[in-house]
Length: 166
Image (tube, rainbow, N blue to C red):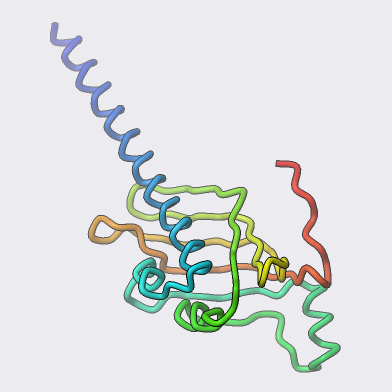
């Protein structure tokens, strides 16, 4: 009887931990969905709380083909840029933009997470750029917050996004 009690307790704990893991993944996916929705609706009120209150890293690497194209217009063009989420949402406030996330991979332990995905950024229904993006996230006060955004950028007009098979 004691072995059965231990076994049942163990099964309950495993079920609870898996349930917590799926709840965390659902919560992280909700942050992704809210992020995309805020861009479409230009909703900074819902966008800002997705991020941790302390400084958040926001850096992009310009892919070589796009960087070479940029150098033709400006010989001092850098192959990276750094900004912040507030500047990002303000920069698209007057535009008809959308960002699409796909091939999403989430790795977390219930308290820290990395989210890696491919994205495409659209302006007035036309794909402007694409690349890979990675977010660092932490859970604080029971909520998942973005603490870093790192991404690559390739302009669609310079090098179209390859077709994905997955």
